[in-house]
Image (cartoon, rainbow, N blue to C red; front, side, top):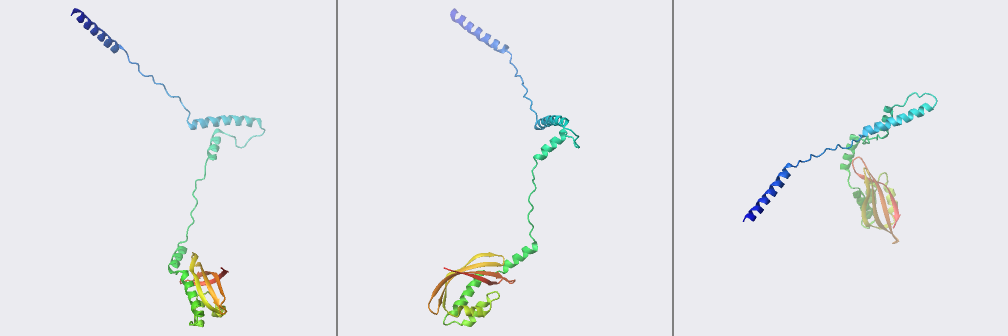
Length: 222
């Protein structure tokens, strides 16, 4: 029993010694190390400007004659800043005349479909050359859809036509403002039963009331 008691006492002494030793240690405070100092962009630029000034000054001394405007560090810095400037001005937008815009809007409201004019014109030709149709009356109506074409022009052009048919429906190729182009394919049969297919492109213009009239046409064979 005495031996066990001595062992316990020895363990207590060791633990107490370790505790006292750990409490007696001093903590080291961290040492602050200042960061390396860096030159700002302006300081660096100023230093370079001064060096350039000294170099130019030496060159100036070697040259003969005096300069009207001596070089200084301020002028060098100013030139460096001016060299990197860019033109940031925005391009001016084109102004649209309100009156012109209003006229275009009013005209667009009045404009009919140019295809309708070609449909009517081809129908008059088809009726005029048919056996039951009134040739003179329909040629007159067809001529009224043209700008400055007399009825005799159409009578002469279709007097020998026996049959007139539409192969493909009229198609608007382009339409801009008061001008338009319409293309159509037709077939004509003369009194000798000779058939010919042609492609006709009609150029149209609109008058002040918005009605389309045929100005001219371009004929090409199939």
